[in-house]
Image 1 (spheres, rainbow, N blue to C red):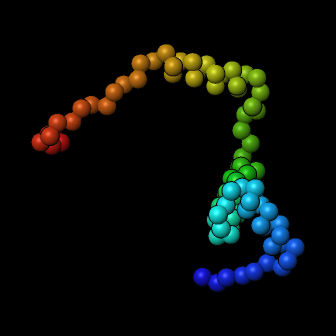
Image 2 (image 1 turned 45 degrees about the vertical axis):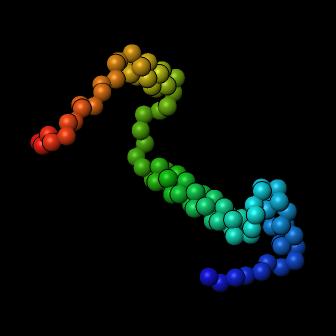
Image 3 (image 1 turned 90 degrees about the vertical axis):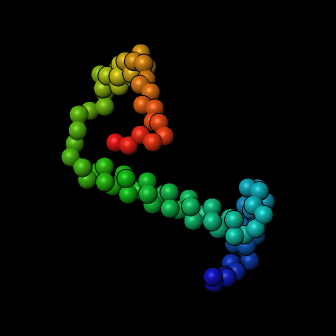
Length: 91
C-alpha cells in the first residue's frame, strides 16, 4: 500500500478529526472517509436512476394513507411459521 502525507494544514485538520471521532490511527480515518464516499456514490447512483425512470403516481396524502393501511393489515395477519424440517427428511 502506498503511504501519503498530507500538507501541514490538512494534516492538522485530519489529526483533529481523528481525535474528535475517536480514531486510533489515520488508517481508520481514511477507511471511514472511503466508506462515506462509497455510500455517497451509491446514493447518487440511486437518485440518478430514479430521476431517469418514468414518472409514477404522485406521493400525495392518498398514497401515504394507502401505505399505512397496508402496514396495518399486515400487522393484523398472523405470521406463518416456516415448516419444521426433520433430520432425514428429503424432498
